[in-house]
Image (tube, rainbow over all chains, first blue to last red; front, top):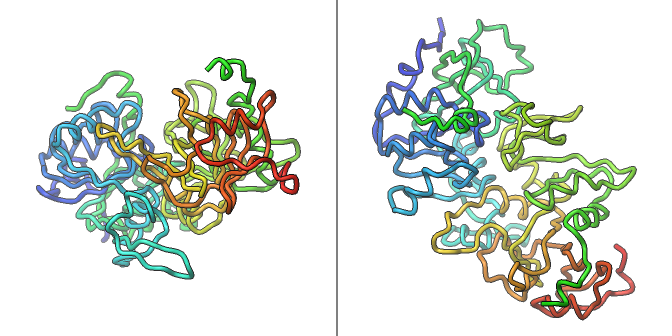
Length: 236
Length: 225
């Protein structure tokens, strides 16, 4: 029987190793898998390369993982957001590496990685500082830069609903990077508010087919990053 | 600067209203953060625009009443928004397929500088202590057909933002078609900046003096566009 369910977030992230590359779903707080991130802090893996659009806010979730010193490199498009203080401080003191990638290029690199495409050409960043040093090629009179596909050892994803096969449905704009990251993680670990028996999600409505998912853990009432930040919460 | 203080010009809302006039009915539109967001309040009578936000929503509606809404229904500025009837959610790769694939019609953005060849600088001042952050700006300007810029004509200290050559790091080369400022509407043409329209109480010399590159007067064949 295929059963991707696991009982706790701690067991879900138990295999993350030092030096791993970890994709973290979400855009701002929408889709941020806070419970998996907190479990990863408890688990202790360090020297991580983390891929996320942002760098978290306050001192919870992704920002807490960074604050705990577990992240050596951030691959992201927008590392400063309201209430984002942890990353800027570490960056200015040279304690974290930033690999800045335009948002659409980041999404497409992840999509390509998950789809087995090692590289692709895009017009984004041509003639800008972010295009410097990249291989270029002209197609039909327009210049493009070569970008590489991205995969990761692990992808941490938050979904609204899952079933034990790993089929996923997201909540509104929380789908964002999560649906592409689910395809690009060698081990895709999902927290979902509900984990159902197969058949409860209409096949026409499945956003991430279960083949992309390795582990699902039920987290019925996930914490809200903005609420935690407003309370001044800090993890651990 | 006394003549600046006396000048009338357009307010932020009036700049947005003037930009909205140039967006055709039925357009799929992406709006940058700041003054461009005001376009939604000034859609000309009888036109319908569908708003795209790059974090995965077509059919974005206004912000919900304070304290309501869903924290996972947000715009690219990470503010809570609503989804209008007929809206669609999608993931980031699809969202940027819409952008790079040329499916969006108009993008309205703010700017630090625009050159008279249409180069745009709007993501970084290049200051050594700044945290670089680019977001979706480079993809939007590389992919969307019509790039409109709304910006003050000069910086707070009076430096021109319409320039011969951008000194700030570029977002893209040769992409801006029209600029709406507090003083004027200016086109980027093959021959450089060309005045399209003056704000009330503003004359050509006033605008030309505050523009960092040659400004051609209104072309009678092209005005009112």
